[in-house]
Image 1 (cartoon, helix red, strand yellow):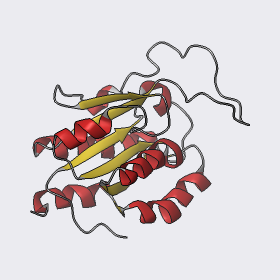
Image 2: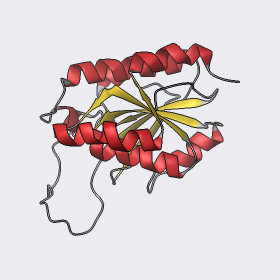
Image 3: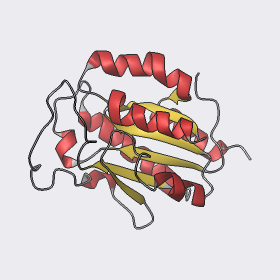
Length: 187
């Protein structure tokens, strides 16, 4: 569904824009994704709306068929990129799974601020972003996805999430669509 409205208390969630992730080979130029995510963060902050910055430090335990990185990550790998301009009022969440709500206090922090809707941007579309969107939807938040402020390592995964999964979880639009709706949030 196309983006129609934002709730009065909408929060932005920026997923995994951190030093170790933005250096990976990605489908879309990361500089454009970062610029759009930062524009969203600035616009939300300017209106006194919550911004949640999420980083990942590891993975969930368990066996998988695909090999996973083992051993310590390089120094600074999980540091949020400086372009995000982290502010003292930002919510910062460190996750160890794909989604930002599992095993974190993100839901409690958002609900304590009266948030009923989340806009999501970041990396990777089919893992961190999609898992966060699924979990937000399951927790009862209205979900909006900034489809031009996200990317993935695999084009087919990115495209599938945007075309088939996201419309079932919420509304999609560009970062500018979201910014344009911020002053028109419903009462």
